Length: 409
View (cartoon, one colour):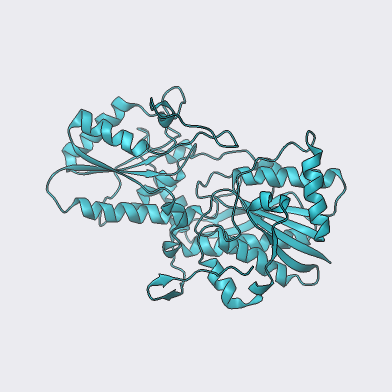
């Protein structure tokens, strides 16, 4: 019998703690193989610093329920790029020495693309030294850009927040007779899944999204202005959702070319983005003379757990449980992913994928889901994304405040 250690990594989501709850629940549920359940604070950096805490108090059902509705990363997070195991053995020797000290036999990392890189390197090193520690990833990212899996926990809730933001902003624009342009900026560095989800705001009762700007389509200012002008002349107000990562015809991020803005890259070499909505607002106001405003959701879209999708919460929990089941079956270097069986009625199954085929690979929106003019999405995308945003979880409130899981250490 060995102990379990779980960490969270990368940017948080509204349901990342539901996956954590799934891992914890799975750990307690396999008491024949798993002894103690530990959490590493602040990702792999916390493990390196030996910031490891007991999660035994989560055997209480009420605490586990609160954890599922708690946003952000309960254990804290980090963005650390691990060295290559072939080039820096000292780092891995230290990490695995700490894992041995705590008698860890099962290591789980909940995260996105960069976190799967951690899982890949950890599992490869474990295999190289013939360690019996099983390393398993648990998928997470609002960007929905993990390869192989149909979708990623975190995306459905963020998409739901965006589509409802668009619908309510549309009602706000109807207050006055003056034509106006509203530009909502969504996260999404290289894949536009979140910006595209704004199209889910449209139904038979209202059209709350007229234009989407995606990283998958080269941004052309002239074509964009022509589109805005056309929609404005036809219906007055214009509702736009733009991805922070839109690029020009040369493949450069629009926000990397903003003159005085000196933007640095993060530890993984990613450019710092944000503010593209304001750029497009100025473009519209300056060239078309229309009243325009931009709204940057920023971190709200990834932490708004009070508006989470029940589908997302449930699947995140199931992925955590399944990860533990895989490890107990002897699997390592795998990630529980979603395989779609049907759209209507929506049906999904969880299957193990090789982390080597996921790490550092970005899944973008296929061309078949983007309209020919590049400013919208097709019905294929709507059928794909709609089920992921559905359902409302039962949440515990007190005095109008959503309740969160208290720290147990």
